[in-house]
Image 1 (cartoon, rainbow, N blue to C red):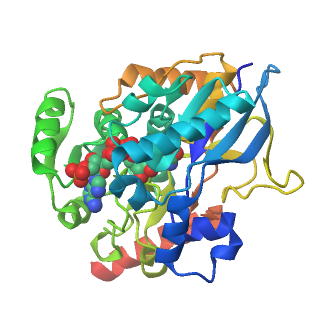
Image 2: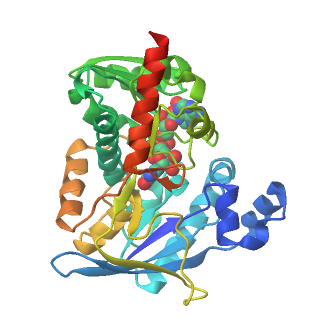
Length: 369
Ligand SMILES: NC(=O)c1ccc[n+]([C@@H]2O[C@H](COP(=O)([O-])OP(=O)(O)OC[C@H]3O[C@@H](n4cnc5c(N)ncnc54)[C@H](OP(=O)(O)O)[C@@H]3O)[C@@H](O)[C@H]2O)c1
């Protein structure tokens, strides 16, 4: 089967420390400067991804070590050059397709320019992320006993590559959908284009708090580098499905809203016996900050394309075709990938915790009535 590489980067200061513990005592500005100078490098070797019918692939995480805000603020050409150098390292290792992790797929035109310049096909991985995110949102609704057909859903980041396709996939199953972003012109245009096709009531707003206050279900897919979902805004018993990396749901939600179910929406269970070893110290495991045997959906899309020998630039740009989302979901299922168990704030969500969230929501409703 084909081999793949996936471009990663630290999505937070904590990520930098996890990869390079020596950064712990240093200030953020110094670390950011060091990252600016640090060359791209092969960070991890992934093996053991094996389909139930015996197909196997291997791949490499190659780091373009910039923080999200650096990806957005440094000169675009400089950032592109760094991502392309990371892909070149993957090619030298044997990769035949490259995935773009987190902000490497957000910067600029969401992979279009990079695909045109890279020596191998490139995918953002957003199609499988969309499929996983929508499934996770509805799984969360079912866990909380929410009837989606009468629910109001807010999609935050609704003009984005991931958010706009999520709007289309969610709409047939809910009563009302609210599209949220910051750029009014783009949002109005996106809503006008989508509203004609959406089989539910829909509206748009720049006011995140107002949208979230009305929503039973919230899906976030923003390129924000700070929190956008705050505990004060959430409805009793709401479900929040977070696709954004870095996280954009305030960590305060975990502490202050025991009645709200937050789930990371983009995690997939990987078939076989996935191992990730550091390239520089092959006897040491690479800490993905994910449960064993799981990968993010964007990483999974890249691995699935390799397993299917579909070395093509599968997902690029904004305005993703829903047929493509369905196709990669079918391919992923065929390869034995599935939604990972629920998780939020970097820890697993147990059945007991879901029961506790439902009980806290019921209690809050009783107090309010
Ligand atoms: N979990 C996974 O497996 C996975 C995979 C791929 C990507 N991701 C993450 O998913 C997120 C979205 O990616 P994308 O490719 O869809 O990005 P994108 O195409 O750039 O879209 C970002 C969206 O967020 C909105 N936005 C940005 N800042 C905002 C803010 N402060 N408040 C409200 N809306 C805001 C943007 O509109 P305005 O600019 O008008 O606000 C736009 O609608 C990123 O965080 C990315 O890292 C996760």
